[in-house]
Figure 1 (cartoon, rainbow, N blue to C red):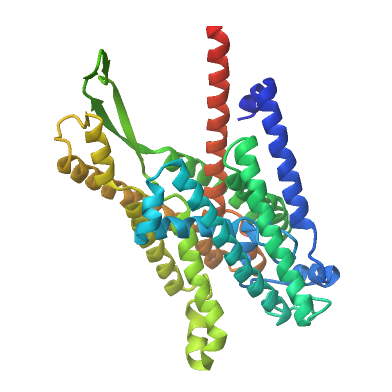
Figure 2 (figure 1 turned 30 degrees about the vertical axis):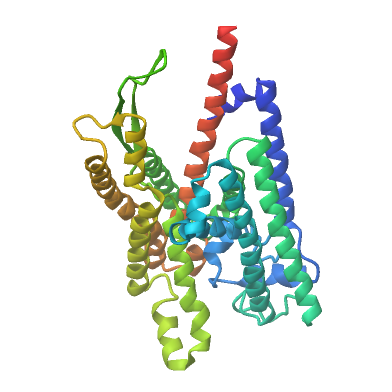
Length: 429
């Protein structure tokens, strides 16, 4: 990876893109450190030092430590990521969105605009929830000091407005990186905020227990290697295109393949399952002592077997569901048939779509189990270590590893592709 970066910095065009991306990353991290107006920074720092556990432990890692600090970019990229996934789901249910998706670039532009509107709406909802929890003393458990200097309606509205504006700016920065930088902008920013909190977690674990630090470090190396192997694994379906004459020209006669990844769903099932399992924590205080107490004992603690089982089943179910709506075997088979393509040994049309659906189902099974096991690893570590400090700072969660490995591999591939393109152009000249 370092070799690829050194080669990229030697190319003037790529060097400009890399420096622009690094500048946006620096601005993004500055916004995650900068506190929102009306937030008591001293109280937040003291409460962060004494807090253990809490509702947003996992989201704290994904937000780069910005959410519990109530910073300007406290919500990070999560509202945009959630809005993008929701729009993909709605494209299957709403006929208008499905029509726009098939209209090409113009339709995609409208869907992106709808995604922006939904992102702002989710940012309003999320920021209001976070500020309400901070105002009620539930954001940081065990903290008796007020986190807001002004808890009036106007003071709360200012903090909410600042967080929503920060989310809108994060969305704009991500689109700038996509257009003028390297890689997918929102993925780069998600990678940044996930990696940013890693050194703090590792140093805390080392101070608590050097032996646990060594075990986690070795485990992390093998875990990253396993994730790289699974993320790269794919089944290639060979496709042959027959020759066809259009006027005086002959088209086709080429061979290619359809790459079907083992983890076709990516990180979306883990995000879905995590969001659903936050609901019992939010609803428990409203349902009374009996129902709320049962939810608090069984569905809010990551070490409870019922919680683990529900988490695993939700991830597997969402993996199958997400793959079924993002990859349509019938549509792929029809497109192949339209351009005289076929899978060797199969007739075009329905036999091809049936075969693609069968292969996809067989691949989704190990991919879904892989996601479920990867997401359960930190929960199992919590149950085994039984140290609150180590549990809170366990860094090798399934979501964080998927983000870091997936975005890192994708960015390096894009840099290598641009390097090869420029080398081939220079050679031909």
